[in-house]
Length: 158
Length: 303
Figure 1 (spheres, rainbow over the protein chains, first blue to last red):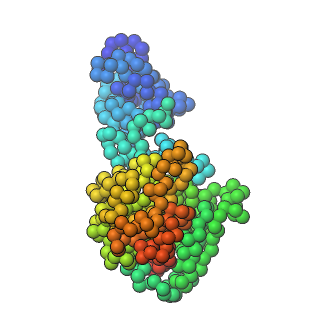
Figure 2 (tube, helix red, strand yellow):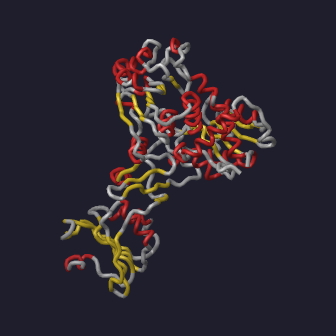
Figure 3 (cartoon, each protein chain N blue to C red):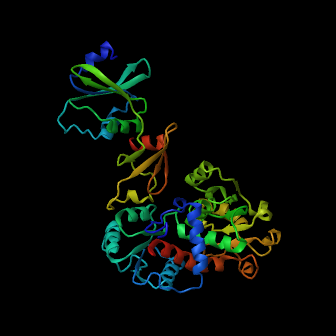
C-alpha cells in the first residue's frame, strides 16, 4: 500500500506498471535496464529515497500506459533484487509480481574481462551471461567464462 | 556416423569422458598412418596469433588424412590489417572451407566463430583458458604411458592463471578419477572459474606452493613456464623461480615411472639435463599432436 505522503509527490496511475521497493537510489538504473529513455512518450514518474517500513528507504517508478512483461521485469532483479511489480488497471492493482534474475541475460551488462571477445566493439556479438547461482547471485560469461557477482554488476551502473 | 560428427571444439569441458576416450582410441589407430579419409575436404587455419606446434600439427594431421589446407598464420598480410573484423573474416572462411581452426588472443573468439560459421570450428587456443586439443593430446600421452588415467596423481606446475594449456589440462584431466596437485606461486594460482569447476564436480585437488613438498607422490608432473612479467615485484620472482624449474637432480626424489610433461615451448623451466632421463615425455607429447588432431578431424568431418 502506497502511503499518503507519497501520493502527494506522485499521483496514482490509471493503467500501467508500478515498480515498488527498488533499492534506494537505483531507480535511474532500473529505467536504464528497462531501456526507458523518456523518448518513448509515455508518462513516467520516479521517486527516490522515500521512507519505507520494510527497507528504511526505497525508490518507486511508475510507468503510465505500459504493462511490463515478466521478461522485462526480471532484468530489474540484476540491480534491485527486492523490487516488486504491480500491474495497474483502472487505478487498481490487478497483479503483483516478484522479480528474479533470468537464466540467460543478453545485452544488459558487460563482461568485466577486458580480454573477452564481447568487449570488442566491431564484432558481431552480444554479451551473454548464464545464471549459475541465485543467492548469492553468480553469473558466468557465455564467451570467456568470467564469473560475475552482484558487486561486479552494480559497479557497471555507477 | 561418429557421435562427434559436425561438432565444434570450443572447450575441453564440453567433452564427456566417453567422447575423450573415443578420440584417444581413434588417435591410437591413426598414429603413424596416412589415409584418404578426408580426401576433397579443406581445412582453414585462421591463426590470428603466432603458433608453431599447434598450427603445423593441425596441417600435418589434415594432410595425412588426404585433405587440403588453406589459411594464414598471422594478421600480417591479411585484410585484418586493413581493419576487417574477426567476425567478417570467419564468415568469409566459412565459405571457403569444410572446417575452421581458430587461434586468437581474445577469450571467447572460438565460440563466437562457431556461432557465425556453419562449418565446424576447432579452438586452437583463445585467451588464457581454452586450448582443448592441447588437453586432448596431453591426456593421450598420459594414457599411452600408463595405459590408463584413473588413479594417477597429477601435479600441474607453474603459471596456472594465465597459461591456457595449464587451465585446459586441469579441466581435461579432472574428467578422470585423478588426484590433482596445483603447484604455483600465490600470484599465479588457478583461475576462480577453474577452481569453481573443480569444486562443483567434486574433484580431489590441493593447492601447494612448492614442488619439493609433493614431488615424491606424483605420477605426472605437468610443467608450464612462470614468466617474470607476471610478477609486480621482480624480487618475488627471483625468490620463487627455483621451485618452478625442473632439473635432473630434483627428479631424483620423483617416482621411477613419473613423467615430466610440458606443452612447449619451454625456455628454462625444464633444464636440458632432464631431456635424457626416462622421465622426459614432452617431445613425445608434442609428436602426439598429430594423431590426436587426425582423430578429431576424422571424427568431426569423416561422417
